[in-house]
Image 1: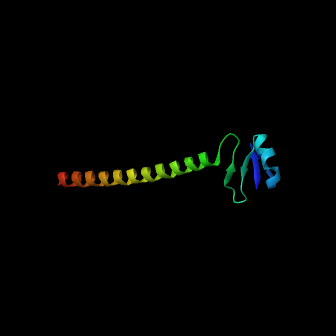
Image 2 (image 1 turned 30 degrees about the vertical axis):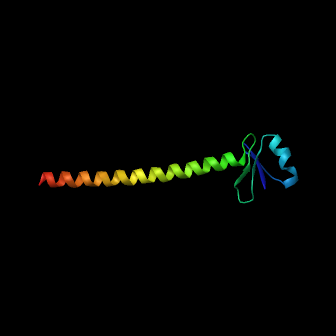
Length: 82
């Protein structure tokens, strides 16, 4: 696991985790996923990740809908011009 703060990164053991958190370091797993951050709970981070995923899906859906609408208006303009 890693302790990260600014441009400092230390490889640490589970025993050292609380010390680094109290000094303001964020703790990441060996897979570089956030485990714990000072002042933030893991559940809050997970909640934000889920919200981000939902918003990205909604954004993609709206972009696809917009493309479909633009395609229809282009077809209408072509048929009106003929």
